[in-house]
Length: 404
Image (cartoon, rainbow, N blue to C red; front, side):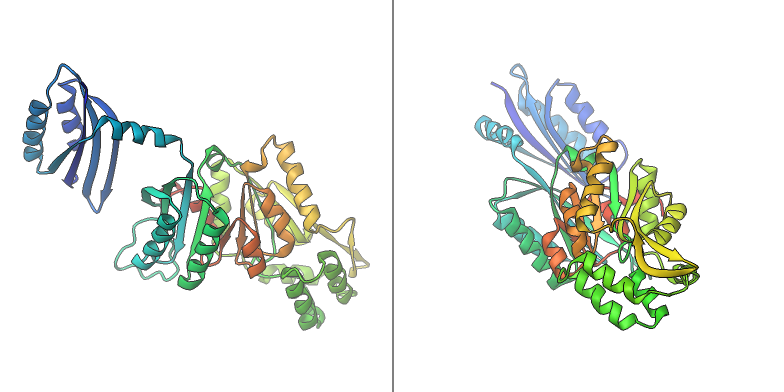
């Protein structure tokens, strides 16, 4: 009868350690049923599940490994695994898997404890925990650095919506972001990212900035806030706001564009997405004049927004053509995906307003970015504490894979 043994190796990591130990096993022709290794602060934790052939005995194998481990200066433990326990473990491999991503400025024990408690209470099991962010130096004086830990969990949650609610509550309490998403082939095979523009790619609402120039800033900002909260129809709100801008000089557009900053992490995110072959789209209820500047600066592939009507060098208070509202955004997203030959599961959509929700919920990964509560509740994922480049963590990228 085959013997199944779990070998655990711990100690200081060093080059050649795994090679030496597995080389020792190779002499007895054992099968490796599973293997996993992690190194934290140069300390190794290696597990090897082996099956010893019927014609071999375990005692000499264990004795030789213990001798080799002593020479290497590491610790070994051996645990026999009953066949029925092994078979039960094999049967569990078909269970659903999810990824829980913790985003924060600094990772604390309180955050990890809260997340792992929710995982356990919902009948899920943590298989792997991985740090995706880079190592932080003790002398690191940068106050806005990012930190990310990813949990790979196994099991089928009874109520995914309830888990999302629990994570949102923890995120609000601890000032972090927590994403919960299925771990499947599409998560690692997304190819299109669609962004809203105002308060997403850029750190302002353009129409509010134009309104300041026209002397109607307070009135327009109130309408904008109401629209972003989903309290009034976007088309109606846009027409109301544009009417207040009637007669504003078109030369004002340039000066407004110059002073609006990019959102934290936007350039780094898009530069890295382009490196990895993603197509990038702006689908915005804002204006093409400002979107074109971003398109030229960042190499955006697609731009859809509202075109301001200008006559005799002044805004008329109207747009040219149909207004890009919530329904239009969703329609455009579907059209781009179809033309690119992509499933909507391969699409990421990012926005902050209620008019982004249909687009966010169409995409395989929809992210409410620094959004109002109604949008955070309605979207699949939310980021409220870090910059746009933290989206790289949600698609599984490590800092070492990216450029600054």
